[in-house]
Each structure stands twice: as C-alpha cells, then as structure tokens.
Length: 164
Image (cartoon, rainbow, N blue to C red; front, side, top):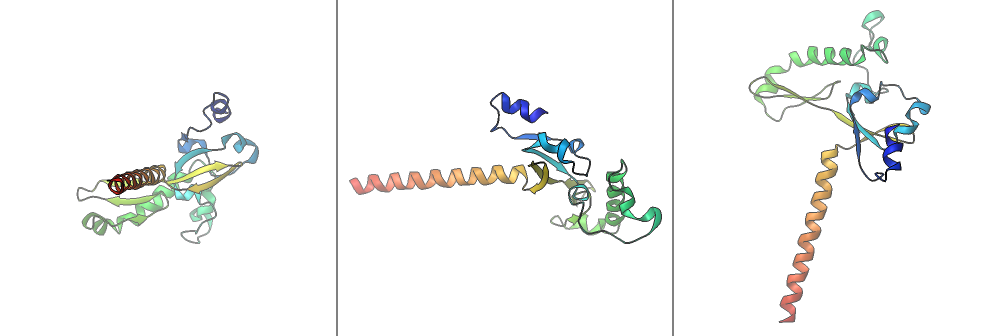
C-alpha cells in the first residue's frame, strides 16, 4: 500500500526501493497489484523461479521441496557455499573471477572476503520482472547527460569560432 500513498502525494516519479522481504518467491496478482513500480534486489534463486535446477534428486534433497518455504533462501545459500568451496582458491587469486550462484553473483578478494551482488527486479502490472541494476540505470543516465553537455558545449564553441 505504500506506492499508492506515494503517488497520492505527487511522488509518482520517485523510484521506490524495497528489501527482499517484500517478495516471497510466489506471484500473487491480488497482493502484488499495489506494488507497481517498486524495485527490489533478491537472489536469482527467488527471482528465477522457473530457471535451471541444480540437480535432480528425490526426497528431501529435491530443491523444489524448499521452493516457497521459509527455508528457500537458506537452501540457495547452502548450495552456493558448497559450490563456492571448490572454487575458493581461483576466486581469491583472480580478482575478476565471479561465480554465478543461486544467491547472487559471488566474488572473493585476496583476504577471503566474499561479496555478493543481487539480481534486481521491478513490479509491473502485478508481475515481478527482471530489471537492470539501479546503479546501471543511474550511470547510463549520467553518461547520456554528460555526452549531451559535451556535444552542446562543442557546438557552442564551434558556433562562436565560425562567427569570428
């Protein structure tokens, strides 16, 4: 209900961000209707609910058993921890190395500090759709603005030179 209130107060052009607590991994058209325009970061495991499955095991080891439960995110972290352990040396020694995990894009520095980049999504018409990182959008807009300024300044400078 926050987005309709922001719109009512003439803030319809403001970006609204949320934590991953807003979305539980299952889309509900009635519940998600008021969330239009809200941007959130979450694990690929949650946002790509129809994405590739890591393995096909039965019983308790079946990853689909945990989908939509409180253990969903913990299961994804566990899978990444297991996969990350076999890649830790490469990730620590090669600064550009990344691991596309179920909990996000993982990297490690020389000190062993693990960093994670989340996936971004935005609600539109009661559906959660993948979107670029807010920083990418901001950087793109800044770049466009900077290029436009340079072009305008160049045109103005050339115009003045032609007038002399």
